[in-house]
Image (cartoon, rainbow, N blue to C red; front, top):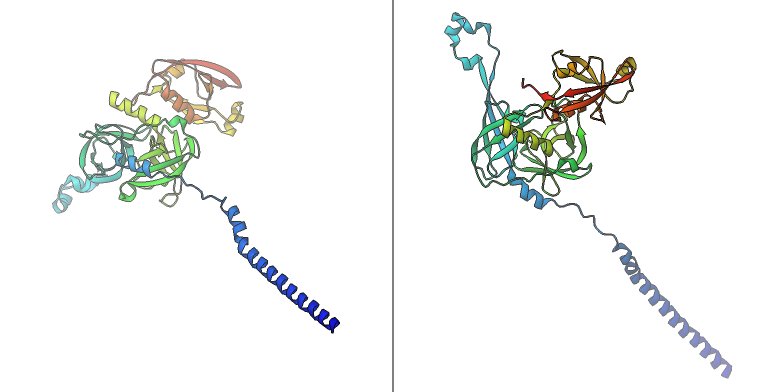
Length: 380
């Protein structure tokens, strides 16, 4: 009996011990399962959301300084040879507006650059110096604008309206622009007033595009479309760093390749238009220059890669008097390298009138130095 009781007690003890251990394991397992997400949570908390730039305050401050421009001008039509025929006039009349002229309207944008009413835009928006230009402010006030001057070389035009206390976009220094810097393009594409698009500076000093004579563009991927011309390119500090001018497109719409005239250039053009009515540019007389090709370099025995080739010139010019001749390759200007024809054109245009510049040329494989006095470029 004792042995039987002892075995029964041992059996019961084992059962109880097993139940206790099983319960503890189950509790531990459930507890571990509940705590697993908590162990992962701290690691997930280290992932912070990406903070995108917020330019809403910049846009709010600068949108009022970008205005809508409408230009109306008359264009001369080709006159029919029947226009002076009496029989023809008997049926169609002799109205010069019917066959001689037609009205043309262009729409664009402009930037207020002074509180007393000076406005910068594009020359192609204005169209001509005798156009009738109407300016519409963001508060819907309309003004007839006076055309102070136009500069086809840079596609810049300056207008003036009779107003005061206007919101102004402060000037920025376009020489400090860096590639990949954030920019805003503000304008009126497709007559959608005060449209803001965001992008970056894609490149600087773009030239040889065939857009204007004097090319030194800021390239941006901020969307620019028809109607944006003359609008503002603004940096992240709310400063005006460019006047939107053109787009490269194969479809007629924005493809992320837009160009703006740098603010420093636009500002210099504006000052000259106010003071002289035209832009003062340096010249060495009538001389045609083209970019040096690899084939030209081989034929003329000059290093390829940079330089400007003199293709034609007139004899009654400072350049001819200084000894420059067609076939010369200009490789340096006042000690600095000349990249191509467009670069040399800008250097000459920016040279102070009356100053003597030193140009280095290569002729028949030998370097030659030319000292030339800069004269004022003749207005065509």
